[in-house]
Length: 369
Image 1 (cartoon, helix red, strand yellow):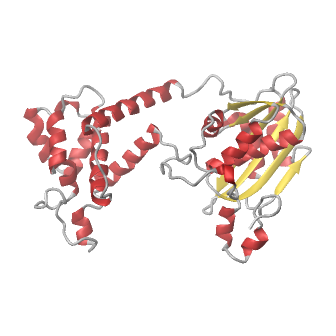
Image 2 (image 1 turned 60 degrees about the vertical axis):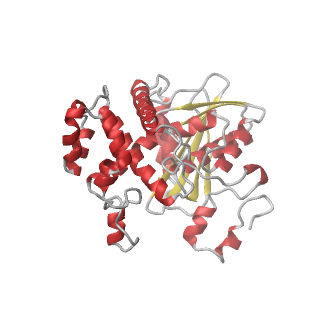
Image 3 (image 1 turned 135 degrees about the vertical axis):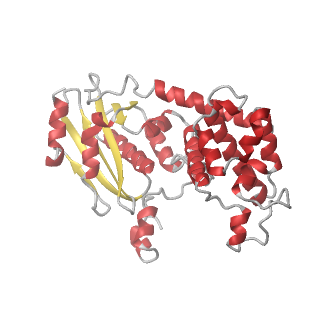
């Protein structure tokens, strides 16, 4: 299914697969021995690498469902004829609704009794579920011994109680490791630390609001990837300029269908490849995707689409000097406009020896700095 050069042979795929599937296949690297095996990853991040930020986002999604009483407890599963009994699989004699899972099952009661002040415990356990969730998520610290950030700890415990319940039901080999409450405390502290770090680093000193000329003797490659429409049509674009802000080369390509991070990775790959082929050996590459910059600055392949990361790392290991930097979108406007030029176009690539009219205003603006 590939050409002699190792690319997908689209003419062969057309007769076998629907167009929407082909558009996803062509953005994926064909198999290669050194790409390694497929592996599972963290589904809440496009990079498939676990992060505290994405885990906290997953907790918030669950809490939104919980406030509306939407998680599929055994009571609800029984109502839908998915199971034979509505009972809690651990208490057996109790009907398993969400309030039971999060408060009244033995495991949950034990956790809350450790944290809640004795004179507040009865009231804490008796409130309607929606009121209980809302009050504690607002940070009602008066009910707990815990000192500060009660809303975060409460959210973590509620989420982990639900995850533990699901693991025990749907994963027969599941074994709880370590102390439940200690895990929750550690996770809460990591969330707080991550949030504090993000506030301190919300605007890094190297994130300029405008494009800057490269160092003397270097060229600067700005790249960007974009995804639009319900079919996630991905496009990439990039521009190479010198220390005088002169246009040396530009490109734009329509990829197919993929995620934003995949498009950003391909944009980086294409920008580096063009710079190498043009003979430049001192290259400053800029992208407005912090995630991609972080990926490229490490040497781990435990990432989604690691085949593309492998291709980029192969380019970086060639005999040249490459500096990679994250910039704000305002400093990457020419590459952004180039990528958008290919929206709605069939899979193809356009090369620009001069700036196209659609990006001329942004290009001239950069020349003024």
